[in-house]
Amino acid sequence: MTATKGLEGIVATTSSISSIIDGVLTYRGINIDELAEKASFEEVAYLLWFGKLPNATELAQLQQQLGEAAAVPGAVIDQLKLFPKDANSMAVLRSAVSALALYDAEANEMSKEANIRKAIRLQAQIPTVIAAYARIREGQEPVAPKADVSVAENFLYMLTGQTPERIAVEALDKALVLHADHELNASTFAARVTVATLSDIYSGVTSAIGALKGPLHGGANEAVMAMLEEVGTMENVEGYVARKLENKEKLMGFGHRVYKNGDPRAKHLQVMSKELGKITGNLNWYEMSVKIEELVTGQKGLKPNVDFYSASVYTSLGIPRDLFTPIFAISRASGWTAHILEQYDNNRLIRPRAEYTGPASAAYVPISQR
Ligand code: SDX
Image 1 (cartoon, rainbow, N blue to C red):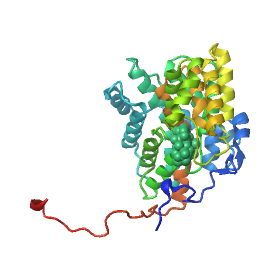
Image 2 (cartoon, protein in one colour):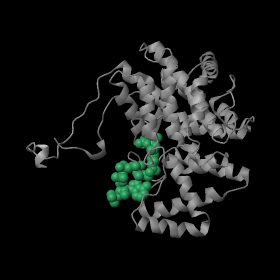
Image 3 (cartoon, rainbow, N blue to C red):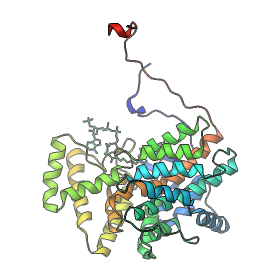
């Protein structure tokens, strides 16, 4: 038995949700480029969950269900108020999603219908939790969600208490479409491993949030912004990149396990980054990002991934950088729950083997002789 480090290239499951073949990303067979231009996040969530695009009635029904489910139990808001004000926002989300299960009477109900209802509730409530904590830590009261607006609009509204600009809603909506699913990425795999024990959907999503938090995965978008802030100005870009490459340090937002010729989502985020930069009158983050890309791709052959330009996009939307990874979670909740539903539909315990590298045989030494 020989281990494959990081399971690279190992096909661990079948899935009909999204595919990356020859660098082309599709959700249920529809190219991401087309979805990014034409679909709303709610349409994409429906597509991921139910395997087809919704008709107008089905979409309206889903929007209504999401709106009605968006308020979280008061007990969970009370817990958010008890958390430290400087907690890691992904750790808060992980804890809050785990807590949401305690107040869901259907949490351990395993029928397909109940699991779909829970997927919709989770999708609706994750943005509410993130926005509520963001306000609570600033000493403000949470803003209750609206029942009749999109996930993107509701999130921005709950964050600020103001009706967001149309352009901001459209940009966030597109970012949510682009992040919604991505085959067997680490957090989705974590979710599938968890529920393959026939554990519940909340446990699966809690596992996934824990996996997304790491800087090699979703946490990279926050790390990209930290890098841009550290670089500060255009003049510092060359020296910064040279130092990083010389010290063989990772450049956040670059590289990908599956894409070697570039992540098809990055170009959409790059365009958005430029457009939003123009609107806000601050193209600094965008221009520094372009320069970093030129140098890293030119010198190391590494291309930007989804997390690279999303950092400047969210910054232009006025979102604090430690909410970037939670926003990834808002979007990916749709993919995680679609994969969880698929796992339940065709389940087998996920239990691979390890290549043992310890001693072949060792004697037990009594404690008095150690
Ligand atoms: C996401 O999997 C998904 O689908 C994830 C995702 C999704 O939608 O779910 O696409 C979202 O997680 C995007 C990735 C975000 N992470 C980062 O931006 C962190 C920086 N990137 C890397 O750490 C890295 O590229 C990974 C983690 C994304 C991929 O890791 P791999 O496949 O294990 O690759 P590796 O670390 O073995 O790197 C191979 C080579 C190494 O060089 P050599 O030792 O062979 O000389 O490429 C180099 C690495 O050092 N390399 C980098 C680099 N990424 C790879 N060198 C500098 N900076 C980088 N970012």
